[in-house]
Image 1: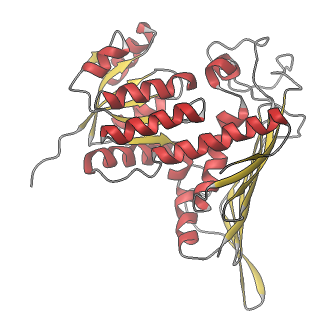
Image 2: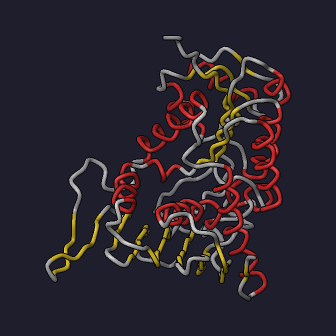
Image 3: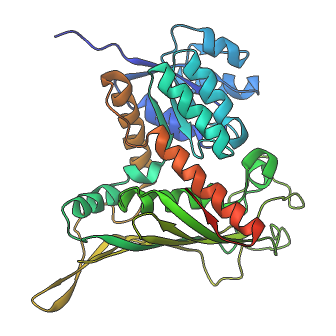
Length: 356
């Protein structure tokens, strides 16, 4: 049997989320961490030293032009995701790109066109699809346990948790908790609902509290360039999303809110049963005229970040090597961008947004 050559990967962007990319690729026997590029040469050199990476690139064009780079993993600011994805695809590289795929639908469609023309794999970083609890629930959904899912609810509410830095700069991030946190919980609901086409969106966006840099005695994650007085993104967003098949999804997300505690919840309701994915997996059914709460016996009832990330990287590497379709393909990134942009548009117009 012919030995499969390992996938040679270059990490683009060496910020905080890149740590999971470096660790996960390093743990995959079918991949090699071949290169790293960051606009901070010092940061790139540090990662190369830490992971024994042989190539540190001086600019992005060097990455594109190196024939030894098979794939790139994009961990940069949101406003560069589309441009780098298109550049890498046009250069014949496979692409794993952190969410969101782009800053707007127009950019997302350009990435989709580049992927189709390249013949290469592009996978979007919808990491919650790869979590153990998601995979277990998906099997129940596919088996018909929930019947037809017609309603879902997704919440990811932080009482204090604006990371600041580029996360709080709309020009670089594209938005706040909606595009940072909402994208994950919306996507996992949409994925479990069968990825129906969006029909209409009503939404609200609030900027009432800022980043609450005055609050003391309570720690939260802060970006490297955090500044308590710099913030141009929303505090809170909510939306009702209706799909062509008649199903609907309600979502609310926040960076800061006068709430007693942080909250995450992902719930789905079908004609035969329901399910809670977060805060931990449970399935609700009915048998012998009795409602049953089913609690699966498994190691990870809630989102297992490190394991999910490893599964995501392993799936990407496998898709690149075998040519199989990725679990989070570019067209899903485009549809998710339609939803995110639609919520912002509906909030701005203060009216429902519809899709043909």
